[in-house]
Length: 503
Ligand code: B12
Ligand code: SF4
Figure 1 (cartoon, rainbow, N blue to C red):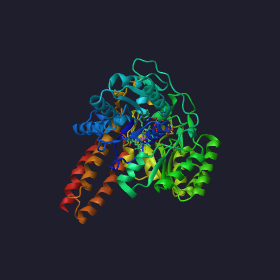
Figure 2 (spheres, helix red, strand yellow):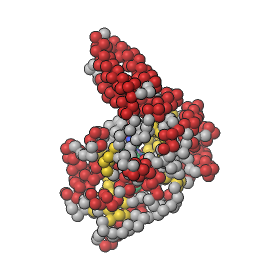
Figure 3 (cartoon, helix red, strand yellow):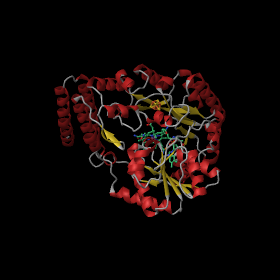
């Protein structure tokens, strides 16, 4: 028996098991096809608390939940446990789970895989003795080889794509034709439906792997570059639509989220492939979906066709509202591309879900102002919270290399932090933190806002206040201006509560 697991959190809604893990679904289906018994057993933890995760420690409550999770996994009496550790944010929880499993049953072979660990195989093997192997790159065939090897020899032997302690590592090429993989096991979708019944309306689908963009902050490109093969691979439209049809028939689900990093393949062949998907989805009918793509790939006629096939929302990695930042992020696109893409999607009635990285280790006040101006111009909801989004430095990225070379990072491969060198930006950020962490939560506190009079007075006050902050940021030039803004916000936060409560 093989158990595949990962630590599930949902930082947004707090729903348990909020999303499928297609990576484990694919590994399970490949192993099952060969005759192995596999269970997918998620371990649930409460929502992520940024301060705890960032300080690189696990709370007592989380540790006992991980211990409980380990016992649930061991109830299956697995020979191998495969733990997915894709997110740098939450890597420690995955390693703690490995430790708990190994402590309770030392003979279990613990294998970890996923984006984050793939970049740090040697270091993970050194730092976490409970981990026996780290899978570098795609896991389906490597896990199959490891398992077969274990069954035949009774021990872990080196196979391509698996990093083992005291053995040479050799990489495994990327799977050249994704259509050769069986459809992913849908165990998690089944748990979700059991748990939440008809609330579950969406299934994940992976139509392609990789990206041909060169963004310096992104680990996707580097992850697939760990293994020889093309930067982007797509499944055939036929295979994708057949899977969608089968999910519809089996689970009654009609809404799909394409988890592809870059839904539109490269060049004109990429566009014709999407047109074929559109044609097939239209024939299937009654399907809704969302996808991610680069702003430069949003073309009116293609997206109008996608809309007609059921496209409802697009995750667009806009990242910044000034060209200097876009260039340092290696986006290969300009603010004009971003604005144009948003305009087209809006005109077509397709929802835009923006990716934005405002705060970086090089940000100047002028760039921050440029980001704010852009967000206001394109009128995306939540401008202030987007303005506060901070670049997370992920292992394996180009930006990690540059910042390490410039000695700009604190921490280690598990979690990095950095300072923003422009003191004016630091002051503005302090003001924004104060605004969003002190005023907004108090406003949403039900007890305080129970009275309708209080609520409407505070709403008006908040709107005026927000506008004042925005105007002050946009007009600030010197450090004194920014410090004055911070003081004004502090005074306003206190004054606002006082005066509204009095009214
Ligand atoms: C869908 C998705 C999600 C979904 C579901 C995630 C999931 N459980 O799969 C949701 C919405 C929950 C999500 C959330 C987040 N995500 Co996300 N997500 C993705 C996305 C777009 C696709 C994942 C996917 O399905 N891939 C397709 C499958 C087939 O591939 P795979 O998952 O990589 O699995 C393969 C291999 O990695 C390997 N493998 C993986 N695990 C294991 C385990 C074993 C044992 C083995 C042998 C092999 C193995 O084998 C698999 C099969 O080949 C990826 C980008 C990407 N390209 O993967 C980002 C990505 C993983 N997410 C990312 C991030 C940052 C996040 C968030 C932190 C974002 C945020 N700030 O809110 C949160 C974290 C939430 C949390 N801690 O719970 C980053 C991780 C970066 C990093 N290095 O840390 C990625 C790489 C996106 C990016 N461009 O930066 N995400
Ligand atoms: S376009 Fe998206 S997936 Fe591709 S490299 Fe840039 S951020 Fe990563």
